[in-house]
Image (cartoon, rainbow over all chains, first blue to last red; front, side):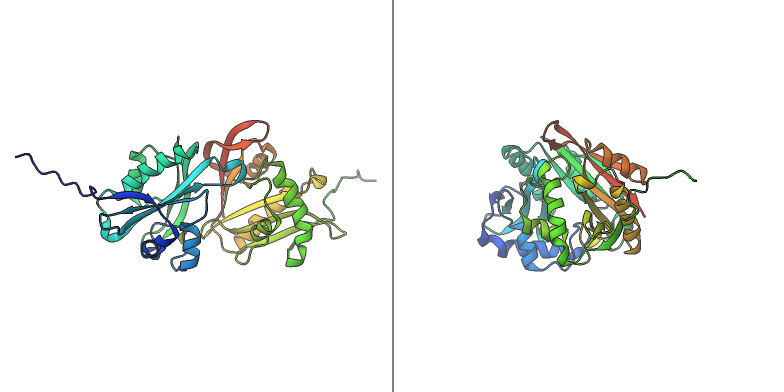
Length: 173
Length: 173
């Protein structure tokens, strides 16, 4: 008998979100944002604003990580980081609900977003605001080939750690 | 008789914009944006979108450089660079109409914006997207104490020079 290897994300599927998926996205958005320790969004961002950002029209894309029962465990967005002469570089953001963390969903979403960004013709993916205290995310991004191209000193006001650095990260495609 | 020193900006005044000022701002916005060589905006950005960015509600501010006849020669915006835990760092953008360039208006506006950012309680001013080819602006920003904290390689598609670097600059307050 061969050893049993846990395959915690075996049932996970990644698919594009539709308007009907908002009800599965909003609880994750709200939980992550309200914590105030990772995103540069107001902690009490209202649902309409959140929806305008996380179910934005093309060329923006929203992708979901769903389990075998169709439950939304994670969500990411991908779109141009700037307009006009800067629109060939993508930006992406990722959220995983607290109940689904530690299962590699974030890693799967980041890897998937790099593939999708390449498919969409972007020349690179840039993160504008990664809290330096978000060490799990920073390590993951570095593992997947991002590099820190800039640091805004004390650019993030962490709810318990005070002013910490905000990293700008980039991955060429 | 003392030598005459040119004082090309002697008549210039800086004042907050009101809704009624849009007619003076739009021609400058459109001229600068349509050139496609400095801003990461779509070159054909429509007037309503432009207004939502450059006459944005508080805490965003719009300031005008006006001559002795009240004509708008330049405009700048100042506001939080990010939301929530990143809102203590400001962002600012500046535009001068082509007919008024070379008179130090840009320098006056940048210096003024640093004062205003300090007055508003920001901890620093960040530029997210300065085309490296915009050498006049880069030199001006460095002169006034900004430093380049990051470079997005080939992050800007210049209309005649092709892909050039996009600089991220920062000035602590």
